[in-house]
Length: 342
Image (tube, rainbow, N blue to C red; front, side, top):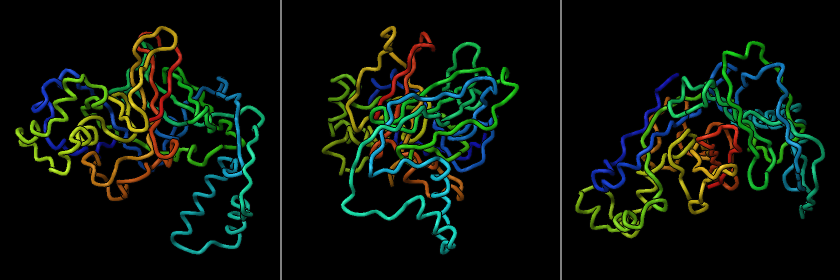
């Protein structure tokens, strides 16, 4: 795999100032999705899956709801709309392209009538991620497996897409399904990931301050501790230094495997296996953004991959700009996984 993106070094060694954090360090693999044309034999986001031809493709039986604000477009129309938007940035659309645009996005009459209605029928799920253990150091597959495949239903269940996980041995797949079914409609265009290759990079992370003991939180809030350590942190953070810790020293943003979650929309919540009550392991973070402008987490990138900040290259948006976290049971991979939004 191309390892050119490199996350800049953290502003300082946080464990030198807060040694209590050292035992809490975890590694995570940042995926750094970037535009490409992955094959079924590549680790990818939104790319084709190494799916056995004789194995049924996953479908979701609902419920699925559409409304008058968000037209339920097909994946083919979403791809066409994206191509038309890209073309508009450099030239005027042809008459044929304009007709296609009006078909996909017909003029609205105002006020918009919002009519919520069920979408009938089974929905074929869409590929979200395919990750080979050879490429992702923090992917810990169950015994006998070396490949993770993640799919989702492109409708909210209830506030984000419902996901399905499949572990398999790549060597056992000899006849590949080359034309998987696609859903006839999607609730949101942001639920169709753009095909991306990955550039995995392993980093060290620490917990969000809200997951720490009150003793450590108290030290993080104490600006004098930061000053005494000569960390170089700007005094603008004096009133809320734990915010600087969360943003720049704790968990990395963006698509990643393993590590610690970043919290924002919600406070930390227990991640217990619904089948056996074991503490679940972080598996995959599906991210809307790669990072904020000015963040020290933004990696060095190839010029062709710019811009480095903003929506991630897979063009996925969760909610109003959040992340979707997937957790798995460490003792029994067949137990149900859980999904959280933050």
